[in-house]
Length: 167
Image (cartoon, rainbow, N blue to C red; front, side, top):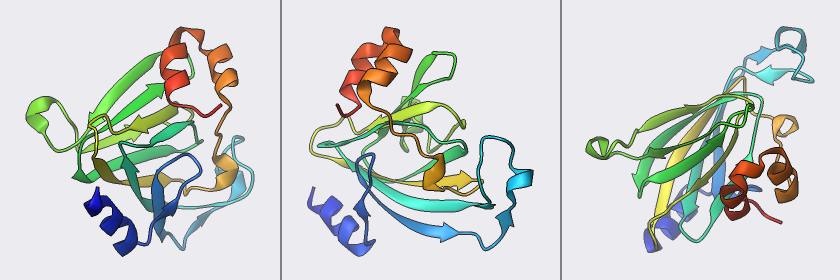
């Protein structure tokens, strides 16, 4: 866990509202105007944004969703377990890591509009990933629901929702 603290310091990561630590590393200069984005967006968005994201086994990234597709890239540490709930209620999970022989993937795309959460299941470890969003991320597109709302919407997934949301 000392390595995680070193990474947080060296990369100047800050606490993220969903859990973990992050820092934006890229925001394109180019902009997509609102009329070219579709009705789920209000205002213009940059073409693309990218962050570092570090999660420890002592924390989790709570279920949330954004309008955009989000590409996760594995960099360092233990594998990260990503949980997804599609708009139709279908649950799936994927392990993002570098052990291809264990069916881990070094990169994964979360489709826009899917609910997703992440955890580092190996105790006393961390995971450093990057997340790329296009069109670029804006907190207007970020939905971090209360637990009860997600449980009411997807009662069949109550256990994982309860585990990976805040009251």
